[in-house]
Image (cartoon, rainbow, N blue to C red; front, top):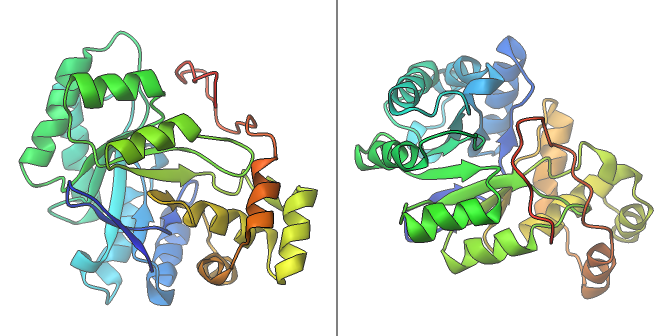
Length: 276
């Protein structure tokens, strides 16, 4: 498994397991199974209501904790310093761990004290309990303010990214600042299997459309992907995407697809960048 390593001491496998919207025993079983077949990157969040289920899997697996990268996130209504620290403490308790590999702000919000929020996030890294920090769903102007103006040592940004949603500008910024970009909804809510061009590429290589879509992401420097997969069949299929060999014609075909098909944009979402 390839990993993304950067100057902030991030060491994150490029392919991870997304856990939303799995809950309870289903989530615990899926995470245990994923660890058993070779996954070493698990993504969760306070808002998913499954951190405890992930924690049960971490406690039950034979894989040493230090070999597993775990990402979690604080929700947008818990971004005051006191609320963020409480949320962070609850995350560690739920995960049954005394540290987290990557702790992120899940969504930006309005009418917040950005400086105090970021200072609190940085303090969690400085305490050593958050090995790395990052943000999710931040548009480029806000990310630039946090990284360049405020100097926050962010290791990663997590955003929706797939064959029909481009993140060119964010990815260029991430590479410039030695950050990982983690792609959530990397299969476009499974719509990649319906795209004729992706299906043709898959048929050409004798693989699944989902494997083509994942490998396109994983071939890119600094990019990780966290597809949700509860069944062993799907978990193994996603792992097998690492063995797909896309050629220049395949990449040109994917590049020509529309790149404005956003699947996730809740009412509290920020103003997305227009030029992608």
